Image (cartoon, rainbow, N blue to C red; front, side, top):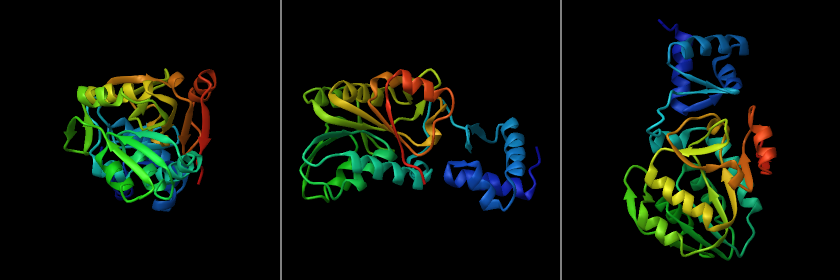
Length: 255
């Protein structure tokens, strides 16, 4: 394929954001939805982009996640809306676990005005953010620090978390596949996430629209282990039926 200037600009916009909705591309490029969809189809056929329901993203591997700095800018406004919705549902004077991820980091920022929180985290970025809240006690998990995103992973981290039983675990995920499985990339991180799920009275999943139908190599768990899902758009098929069957409460942080 020899992309024309409009298609090159479209590709640049997607690369800058990581994942975007079709409507955003049409507004940014000043063209119709039909034109954007035709361009996306051509570039997806060439392997330059990956389509998902309502949007498009850069092609991703099932064995390696997108770099942390790039993930921070992906669907930034959607993550902020999700974080605000999560924070509004978190009561004061409760115990939490927050795991690794840019969405949980956004949740940490949204919790800066809560009082009486005790937060356990295996994410050094979350710990730094919440340490600015004098009404929040932060407990940092021990283990191996993963340099690319300051996440703490491995058996030692899982063993540390297994001492606790918190009110709410707020977790992010790399992908939700159409069989309801929750997936991630690093098996060392997955072991910790599984322990987090097992040691919380409620599990809340914070995941933006790009996580649906995104493949990853390692199984973390299943939607049936989640109590609430916070997302920024209606999930595509077949997820509404899967969520209903799993009795997961959905909170949509719409724009």
